[in-house]
Image 1 (tube, rainbow, N blue to C red):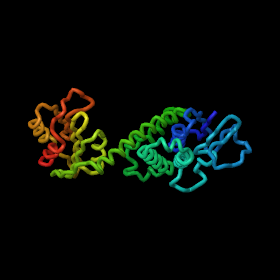
Image 2 (cartoon, rainbow, N blue to C red):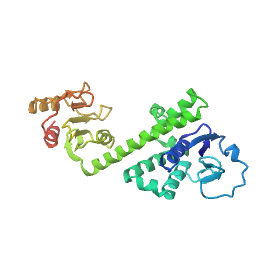
Image 3 (cartoon, one colour):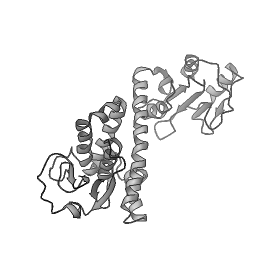
Image 4 (cartoon, rainbow, N blue to C red):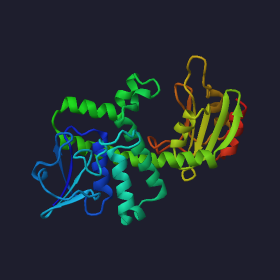
Length: 301
């Protein structure tokens, strides 16, 4: 039997370590997860006279056991004060360095996604969330860090459930980070930059819808995306705030309706979003206008 051991009430460092082993370590996908008091080893093996080794896998009869984030083994970081290291980073390095099969199957984008996730986990494990921007804001209660804490209040003592929840979240995060990395590349290499009286804008012909949100976070006032497969257009500008107002897209809406009256155009009530197609309404008719034709309209509003 393969057994992964971590501490009770597992935090994101422990859960991420378990996830990495079960997801990427060949033969460990179905490993049983057991929990011990923090700092301790699995009781059945605590008094074993096994010679210490740098190999995290310990053999006890027919069982193979890996301790993570507990037990003072190779994948427990509590014997170092290095704030750039945690159990998750040690586990990730172990998976990549020791098991060529896992390394070969991971694309560069996938590997970068996991590395960025692990970096966040390391920072959280060293309490660096106190340095996040506006760290006391309510928005962080919506983060996985806040949700896991809330889950422990709502369902105390259900360690296995915390791990199952965490693994589902981490699998989703990998997909989200891969999409973000793709969007970053689109913004850097393929974005068509333009200028409006409201500020800088950028347009894309891409399948990746994340470019809109990420471009706005990077300071672009108006962003648009044309779906090269379906022909749909999405245009967004920033919400109004004190000292920094987004554009009213009403003139753009009226101009585009005249240029292509057969297309379906929807102006959001906020006047900050103009849609010509959405997964929420597959009956909308895509525009025949090109990305550059629409950019020309945006440059003149």
